[in-house]
Amino acid sequence: MVNIRKVTKDITWIGASDRRLALFENAFPIPRGVSYNSYLINDEKTALMDTTDASVSEQFLENLKAALDGKSLDYLVINHMEPDHCATVGEVLLRYPEVNVVGNAKTFQMLDQFFDADLPEERRTVVKEGDKLSLGTHVLTFIMAPMVHWPEAMFTYDLKEYALFSADAFGTFGALNGNIFVDEVEFEKEWLPDARRYYTNIVGKFGSNVQAVFKKAAGIDIALILPLHGPIWRNHISWILDKYQKWSSYEAEEKGVALFVASMYGHTASVVDSLAGALAEKGIRNIAVYDVSATDVSVMIAEIFRFNTIVLASVSYNAGIHPKMEALLADMKALNVQNKKVALLENGTWAPSAQRCMRAAVESMKNMEIIEPGFTIKSSFNENQREEFDALVRQIAEAVR
Image (cartoon, rainbow, N blue to C red; front, side, top):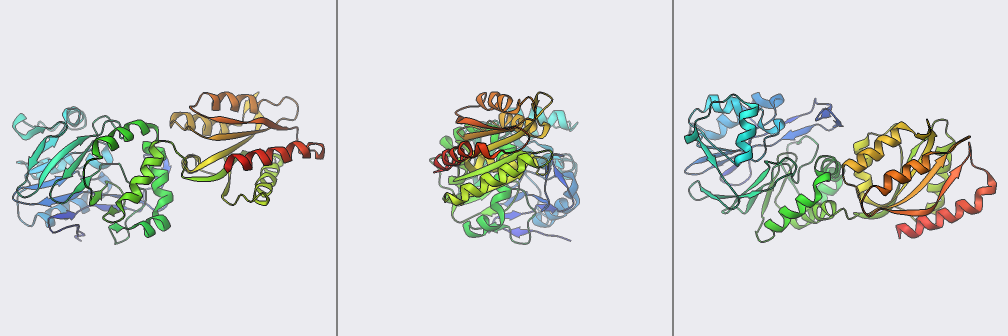
């Protein structure tokens, strides 16, 4: 059944949602599913803005046909060649053999790698920064966005509608439930955790690239943001831009503390729970505690981006760190986590090693301030350590503030 939605008089959303996929990129849990957005601009010439994942191809192709309503498809603009958005390009080329494909030089390199399309040169429009393409009353211009988050990524800006087709930028996990639009209040209530988790895990490593695109786009008016995942922005644009500004500059969204614990038999977890309680008594209200063995790493990375202070607590394991904590630290490094205050807590019954190893990992990251000294328990907490523990609580509370 056709499912298309009007964005403006001339722009139609023709995407689809997948609620059955368990892991995005076969890595990140998406219990709320995901949407794959595609858009059609209907002017004197028609332009399809990206395609969709193969899982929703039947719905997408039905929507495209309905939106065209008998007209020919003149252009296919490819902003991003990742398969969750380009998987149906081959089918579009077969069904619309006269379509002209628009992309940058790297787009076509990847197009030829993914598809044996045998697309002739006269149907390839190679664009670069600032080039324009007229559809009639709509004029499109192109903003190169390399490594946001693939090297060929670009944004397309519609000069008539002040509409930014932003590829993966401003996207979020989660299927669309009827409404394709969002405002600040609804987004903060229903979408923000998934948007943060999407950005930090998919794009988070490339903050400097996002900042570079922000500088290029600073002079344009934006009335609509049309991402490839999640809802469309047409109000409170500055609100989501501010979130991206914080995330991409590695600035904490909130003052608070996230505590991450790798505990084997409960002793380390008990100390962390007591630490969280003591921080609450000090007036710290923004506190989150996560068992690294029970929480997906993508959730923890998002929380690390969110808070200004974190606590890493691990048992010693094989003269190193618990494997789950080690994996979290590796992800932090890979995703360019920086500008955090970090407290370290270890447990070791005979040869504590976790603090030394966690310290080395944290010190390899940028602008990380370790709260000194670290805290060590041997097997379980000893009341003789109360004064030391209370001092740690005060230092963490001060760091949060």
